[in-house]
Amino acid sequence: MNQLNSQSNNGNIPALECRNVSQTFMIKSGIFAEKQPLKAVEGVNLSVNRGEVIAIVGESGCGKTTLAKMLLGLLPPTTGEILLDGIPINSVSILDIARKVQPVFQDPYSSLNPRKTIKSIISLPLKVHNIGTEIEQKNRVEEYMRLVGLPNRLIHSYPNQLSGGQRQRVAIARALIMEPKIIVCDEPTSALDVSVQAHILNLLQDLRKKLNLTYAFISHDLAVVEHLADWVAVMYLGRLIEFGKATDVFRDPKHPYTQALLESVLTPDASLGLPEITLGRGLPNPLSPPSGCYFHPRCPKSSTECSEKSPLLKKEKNYSIECHLYN
Image (cartoon, rainbow, N blue to C red):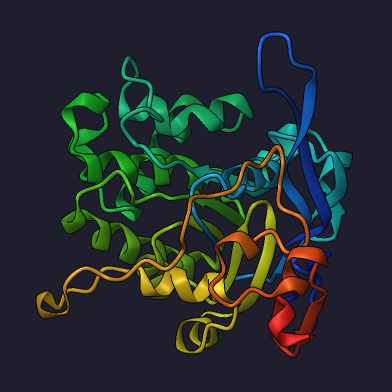
């Protein structure tokens, strides 16, 4: 079991907390085959305090998006519980969850209704929650458009009349208009041009400081994570295998998987060429995970113990790792 904690100086209740959260799906591998359990998320424990950013990173298929759906209350955990400000998420209605937690999705081209104007899209949460009159809602939409850097002249435009960066700003304004405390960002810049990504990231940073927001940032782009995150949780095949302050993880990654991820990051220095990727063969079949340490078939440092025995969690102050090399 993983145990991650980013404790604040004032000892307040975490804004967001997962306690031994798992998600298992029953999947058929063929037409006549019996259903098999697929552990998309397994035994995750983490917490993040008000105003902090925790980034959850890993390859595609590692369980990041499934975890994001559970944090948003869209998918109940199979086991374990998720708490918002110390309150179990399963004890409150979905409308109450939406007041505290809002998403910013990966693709602004598909997350906005093409038949609705920008005013209708941003004001939709207010209408669902029956907040304010028509005039008050319009004024609030204009306020949040200014906050995210959108000119007021776009209020009656449609998504197809906007650029990718402008559409993502609309999505951010829609997420913020209910004044939530937590924003779950599921790779919010990966569908944007590189030139636009920096503007959106800087906007997220500015909004975090202005509104004291807490971010759960789901990403596979380590360059983005390094720019934004306070804490980094590395996920592999549904498990959190390394956790620590972002500065520590990037300066001295300990788990072989984290090391390989960082070595695979492209550098702007053309003289260095393409990075060496040391992850070996692809991600194992999640329907039949390896014995022992899940990462051992791809690990250059694996031993017999790694293939036979699951690693125990080693936890130090502000750092956790699940690897036989550190037991």
